[in-house]
Amino acid sequence: MRIWQNKAFFALTLYGIILGASVYAADPPKKNPPQKDPRQAEAPEPGSPGDTLTREDARMAYLVYKLLDKDGNIIGADLARGAKSFYQNCRPCHGEDGMRVNFNPGGIPEFIGIRARRDLPTFWYQMNFGDEERRMEAYIDEIPVDEMRDIAAFARTLP
Ligand code: HEC
Image 1 (cartoon, rainbow, N blue to C red):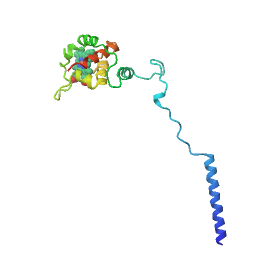
Image 2 (tube, rainbow, N blue to C red):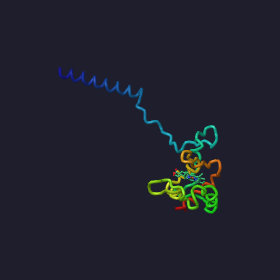
Image 3 (cartoon, rainbow, N blue to C red):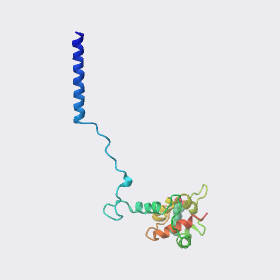
Image 4 (spheres, helix red, strand yellow):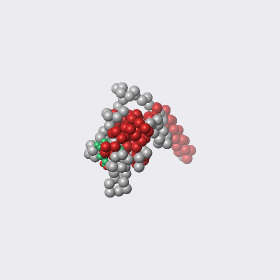
């Protein structure tokens, strides 16, 4: 009786193992499919049909990724040219020393120099695309990008 029961038990167990193995063999659990590293994806040529960056993205990417070194310094700026261009384009509103427009009225005053030193992407964004509500002009069609780089470097020397 016992033996018979054991045999039946073993037979059932064996059947279970075979069944499990065949199910596994028919459909083995999938490993995670290999993931592509997005950083290694082929970048489309700027301006090509595959290039989906907006004008804003493309400009900001260039300024932030191509013109800043790993310490956040602006690469290859010409300060004298930046000063000239600043006086010509920005001084009328922002003032000789950049302190005529305070971006933080009611708080600790913040001027163009502080913005250029502490938050260059914002500085660049504002210079390129402006802010209609705040009456800051957009210069993307007025000032060539290498001159913007120079203005930013000069602005960093202002208070
Ligand atoms: C017609 C006047 C005018 C001219 C010219 C001008 N700006 Fe402005 N700018 C403003 C005003 C007004 C603001 C907004 C101030 C505010 O809202 O507090 C502003 C804001 C900014 C800001 C945003 C700061 C922030 O973080 O909020 C930056 C950066 C800036 N200007 C850079 C420049 C640069 C660089 C030039 C020259 C290429 C320039 N501006 C020329 C009037 C001007």
